[in-house]
Amino acid sequence: MHFDSLSDFFAMGGHAFYVWWSYGITFVLLITLTVVSVIKRKSLLTQIAQQHEHEKKLKQMRKDKKKNES
Image (cartoon, rainbow, N blue to C red; front, side, top):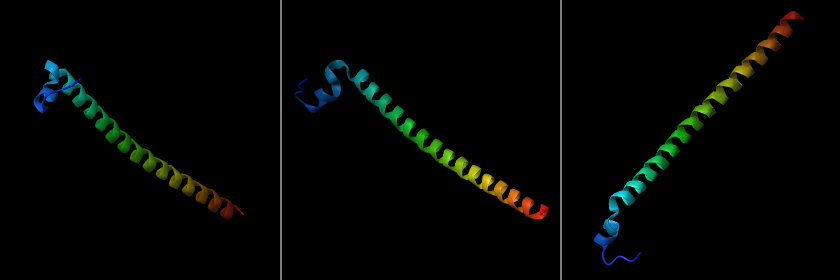
């Protein structure tokens, strides 16, 4: 589509509301998806680190228990 001026471009041939609304919704959804993904990634990494520490403590406790039994 060819536009004669910048205002014609922003008017989108009378369909500006729908065009810019769809761009806006897409932008908001992409930002939301990015933010949620980053938050979930951080949460998952924290959970994995906690689980690793827990397993490390259990291993140490088992080792200490075997040492005390002998």
